[in-house]
Image 1 (cartoon, each protein chain N blue to C red):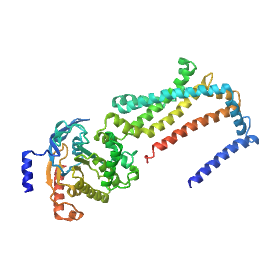
Image 2: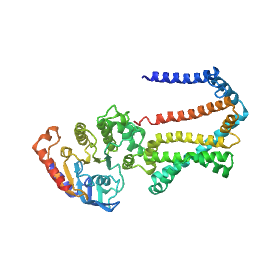
Image 3: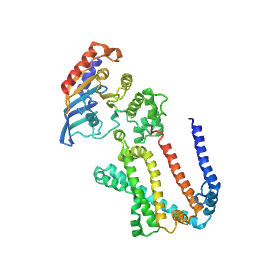
Image 4: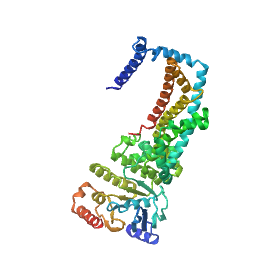
Length: 268
Length: 250
């Protein structure tokens, strides 16, 4: 019954996608003239979905993410977030987690998490409270006073995720956040991210090079071609949730990973 | 070696050197007319500090150092930031500045004297000139030390230009800026001293040059101790601040 009710509700007024990319192309001026980087990319990410983008190096996936974050402007097409175009960075709608954590080394873990709130001059008490909540959410209770150089790689990325979530944006963009971590830490962090994701109900767009990571995390995987980047396949990951490490050994997991790999090989 | 041991060895070396300075001339191993014993020099230091002419010279030198510093540091910092931030200006001026930086500034001193005479302005102008290039170089390096991904993070959280400046640039550059202050003071002080010793009517540098020429060794060494103490005190103060501002640097 509930299912039917939802259907009719969405027919009456379709909820806008959390992120909608509509015909985005990008050309940049390189040393040897104009270089097409992205070609007619369209995709939608439903609210609460976990979408992973994979593709060969230099295919423009980071550029695409930067455009979703409002940090770079595409030459053509539109990117909408909750139905409204993204033209500039809007921390209320989109949080970003970068490669290499990118924490400010002169701030403690807690101050790093507070940073986005400090920018908008939120009251000190509220900042502390929110940041401490986030610190606990990412499992770093008691590490708030540490400086980044006193934290391990995995802990730094936890801080970075907490910073991305501190303003409670509905969408979290993640650009290869675990690429610099060792294999074991990376697995743990993937698992932790899924826990945080299911606890907060965020929409996640996640870029990675790791096929295992892609299948393990995603609701759907988008495969991009080499430059100019296009979306050449969309693979739904039907594995049940919560995901477990054991699933990685199953045939289904292997087949999904293999399909992505075949697509990337064709794409490169 | 423990921290304590290191400090003790340093102290021992210092005592050894000062002891040698005191004893060797007294026993005639070293000619006391060339190197007066430390005790005599310290007595002389107390004596000359009481003389109005020396006090006036100290004030003149201090004023020259301070004014030259106040001119050279902001100007150098502004130029340095400009050529680091603006690619066009950087392309044009960086090589030129590097060329001038490599030239010993003292060879320009006669020109300063010809144009400005041997007064206060000439000392300040020459010292500022000999300092400004090192400030430019350091400021450029400081700006270039700001990491692009930190700026990107701040922008992604909606930082305004002003906030990027105050919350990313300034803290990133702080350790470099203090180091710049320290090094530029060394250049600045040297500039004033050279100008005073070369041609001047007053100032500590002038007095030291005179004492040297007149073979007044106790006065000469007293002057050296005085200047060394001031220079080391400034340097160590800034180094202390530097260490406090850069605990996060690994």
